[in-house]
Amino acid sequence: MSAPTVLVLAAGQGTRMRSATPKVLHELCGRPMVLWPVHAALQAGAGKVVVVDSPAKALAAILPAGVELVVQRESNGTGGAVAAATAQIDPTAAVMVLSGDVPLVSAQAITELLAAHATAGAPATMATTVLPDPSGYGRVVRDSAGNVQRVVETKKAGDARPEELELDEVNTGIYVFDGAALLKALPQLSADNAQGELYLPQVLDLMRAEGHALAAHKVNDPGLVLGVNDRVALAQVSALAQQAIHERHMRAGVTIVNPAATVIEVDVEIGQDTTIEPFTTIKGTTRIGSGATIRQAYIIDSVIEDGVSVGPFAYLRPGTHLHAGAKIGTFVEVKNSSIGTGAKVPHLSYIGDADVGEQSNLGAGTITANYDGKSKHRTTIGKRVRGGVDTSLVAPVTIGDDAWTAAGSTITKDVPPGALGVGRARQHNIEEYAKRPPSALDSEEK
Image 1 (tube, rainbow, N blue to C red):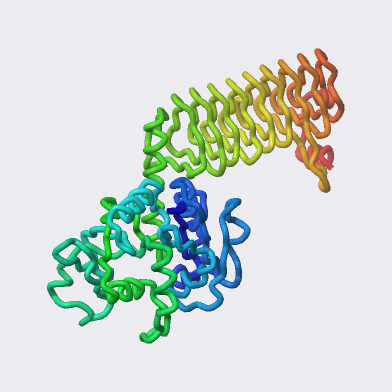
Image 2: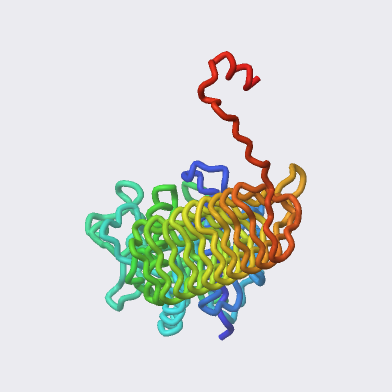
């Protein structure tokens, strides 16, 4: 058999989300919902991954390289969505059908379902799970041999008999088919129902009518197959995803002091023996090395090397690179800047579009004025620089190695290596100023 094909159905608009954004493009822990099953399928070794989109092709720009996109021209149900991908179905390969709004299905779950299908030898295998409250889900009725006899819908009163409503095993909407059997059944689907749509589960009925046994594989963790129909469900699934992300990092040697007060997105990488303290948010493709300490920080698309200290109350914006042993202190914002090995920006500073050399120490209130109203400019700060408090560096400007800046300076010209840059007016004291009458003070101020 050829490597399996995985179809991800993602053409629905999800009206219950009450959003102009298609449902499957809503983010889940830093990744669009639809990309969760796509990545899982790729990790599971799928030979081909195909995403079925609506005519608007809203998903085309986000799909990983090698993932194919097909269009479901009309909104005619799940059967119509699979039929839209007919040209991508290999009759010699297994075909797994996933849903773009069932995001937490894992690579391991996909692998186990494919293995169960191969073992069963049936033309179709459905993934099922057991729910404590199966209300509204289709119940799976098995025969004495354990094969699927039918799926009973329960959305309306009278759809199922009382004994069928007692069943707690439900259909997850995830299937594996033999490619040839699926291609044979798809043209036979009928839209003769109240919604006038083609339903994929009818394929199972057609196969059973031909005398085939249908298999079912029970997924033990129902969280892996939870669907998202509205923002309440999205929040519930997000909580499960976040818990899994935290557990993955902690098992890899990261200390997360209070997971309930920590947000870490799915593509973040963190090294061993790093500590993440409460009220920290780490987003995007941020990479953190080993032995770092992150305190109450907000970090996006940054690189943090080994032994770095960040926060509390630090904001690292995209393009930040903190080299080994660097320190970013309290109420410091860094954007698109490189902070060299062992360099320190201890507190109350903004460093944007700058390169700070190793072992430099910038005083409190250091500001890089990187925007002139039209363009951004870079500031270059050399090695072992000592910056005075309340220093403004007006880019483009270069501070040489071993240079100093005086407190309260506005530096608009390059400071040579080893020099002291002073950019402030000389102090002038007016004696007895406080004793002058108010009229004199007013006149003085004018």
